[in-house]
Length: 136
Image (tube, rainbow, N blue to C red):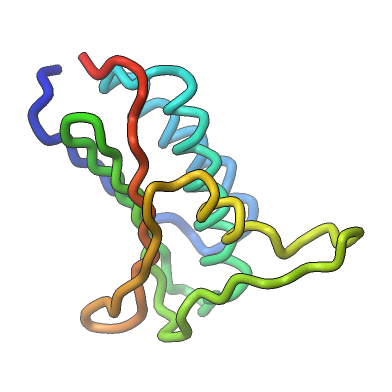
């Protein structure tokens, strides 16, 4: 593929068992697009954290969440949309807590992170990643 814009999106069932499918599909897509292995690993981790949050904190029965990837030049935009209007909120977990670091990890890995309202309902949480490896 050339360095022209690349775009992929898929809806997933809001169940924790589907997060592995998000990881697999994101890895396949970015690898097919020619992204470097380290960049793919970072994007997979970011998508996994955001998808997990969509499942855990925005669950509504029979309402899917959506994952979107966009690559343009040396940037990758990761977006996860769900039906909750509640904005993402980074926790401050205790040192021995097993959960609560997902958004902190996303912020540490991304160039920028944010969220916006989604029409007709919900929100989209996004992370912009800088790609270091080749995109063919």
